Image (cartoon, rainbow, N blue to C red; front, side, top):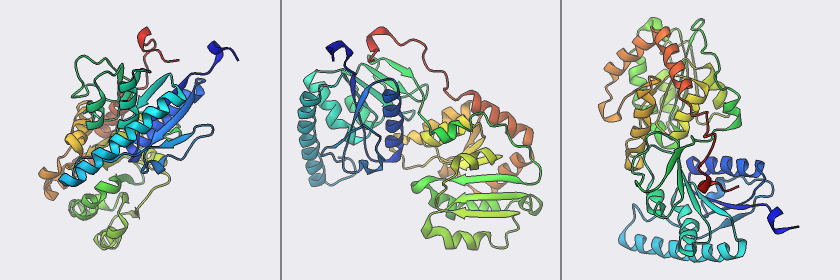
Length: 363
């Protein structure tokens, strides 16, 4: 095979939570579809990466420095140093054409190795409306940062950025622009908060739902995500509460279908959640996770709600009676909800750049 006919090789690197892993998988899949060879580099927590045919997975040492004791920070720094040395070895061994970092501390060794060796260009992808800590550390020397939201805060002025959106699952894209369901025969209220956020929805939100007028409760088909340890308490909240139907689960395998049926969603402000709401086109009340790093969920939510797609409620401001009154008004305003659904769908970043600046072409 001639040298010029050789497929380009791209390293995609991230780790940790599904919020990083799933976009990385989508990016890797897109690169493969465009004729590139891909190598995935992660840490031991990157087990969420399900693997793709013909995509080798390499695991390096990496550990988060934040939230640890002084000795924990030192040990984590040592691991990142060792991981970077490992990554330098892979840079020379694999000879990639580019490195794509998708955030998270597990991306630091491979991206840092690319910076140090100056062998290949680096492109970063940011899921949230605030550049994450790892990406801020790695931004210097990066050729381009692809963002999910506009604007994205804390992006260095000297680093070019372009909004490319956040990849979503094919099952969600199949529901793209699903017609907003007519409110007849029952109002579908879908509540989910993810593994870190569901406690608030399990323990505080039910009080507001029980304060709804009896007539409205009789029309609501409630579907809610509940953590397993909160399931018994949640059932007690809703037993004999007068809802038309109540479905409580700790995990939904049919999330796209639940979004499609929903008249209104109550959820957290994660980038994945908001992007899927925009892809399907559904209005939402967003209660950001208050402990999210750099308060990025609140920033994500503000951008989403500023489009007219939803309503922002900060957890510190949550009052069951006021929340219940607002929710009741929305349930009685199907035209307003339908309009918000249109705004959500209209702001899904579906249109990708038709032409990237020549200096950023990888393939």
